[in-house]
Length: 179
Figure (cartoon, rainbow, N blue to C red):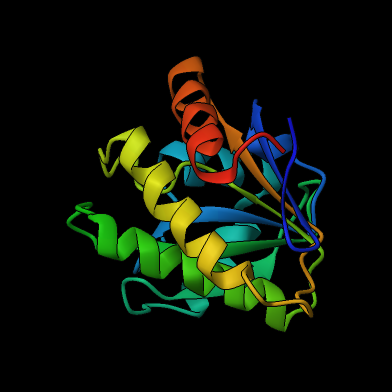
């Protein structure tokens, strides 16, 4: 079920984010921007090694910040590499909050109309799905509330696995209401 914040549609889907047809896919990156396992590894495997090569040229970056690169062979136009952790692979709510906001700001600055997020920090970072949803939804609401000139027509959450999907969907009902 789609939700709306201002002029932006929010969608929650279960699936493979590497198949998303959007302006940008968000990669839950480490601050060195190496793409090893998890979502980053899947993006690199399907999109090509050049994604990581382009990202690493822009690093290292501060944890909580983000950079944008072309998306290689993916169906998305760009990848926004949002650093949710350092090379210690440890994350927390503040890092996820800042990385989500940085990804939104980069998308807006690039004029991107649609962006797909995974559950930031929940894979290798081990952050709980329900808490990641709470943090990410809060910053998205804050970003979009009163922002009538947002370039973002659509924000998708593409979640791999039933548990992540279920937690994000349940949290969306609480935070965004009934559509």
